[in-house]
Length: 275
Image (cartoon, rainbow, N blue to C red; front, side):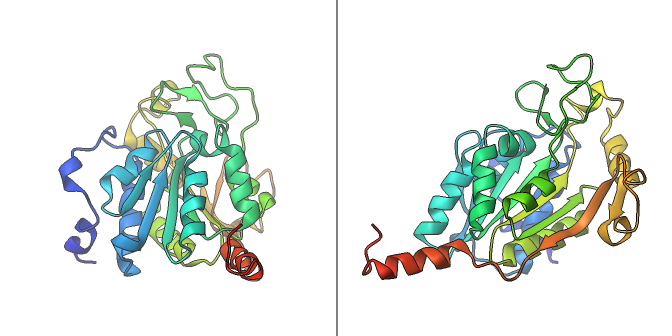
């Protein structure tokens, strides 16, 4: 893909970015921009919503119609946009805390509705921007500023949570598979329903330094060594999959109807009035 095709999606006037050198969020943003470009999306008809956090700064660097909203509430804003104009391409970028803690209720209900939004969850197992507190995905035993002796709460599996709540396209990759990230994001954007793409990434500043993964390369290799394709994982035991990341397409339902289509019928039954 020509460099200029990706660069046209960037707001270069807001560079340099705020992310730490080596942060995996840059890999994810590049995958997202390549996906949008290769699909031929119109920036004027593409909406990207976010909440608060390191990952949520991403829309500020993307030259599309972007919303930087309240912590955990980005899916509520994205839902309003999609209902107002279903023809728009709507994405939501979130961190693991933003998605599954304060935003957890919005997340499960967006999954339940099956509304046509592509949610990209950047899971670095920590609250990176606000000081390194444990999040709902912090692994048991991991050190955080709010868990100096190791986290004891069982972590959420974002993808299982999404599937259980009703999302109709769910997939996972890590920053060690940038091409897979791009491919899955493209499929999520094209899916006619609520799609969740979890991308395992790292915060070497707040999480890595406390958990023996202080360099970006340490984290890249960590994910690379622990990634298992779903086709292979299906034949492995739970013990063999312990501490592994199952990657690829995890769930796809082509039969469930997208929410705005159902909502349009309600409007039509009301005689063209949206009340």
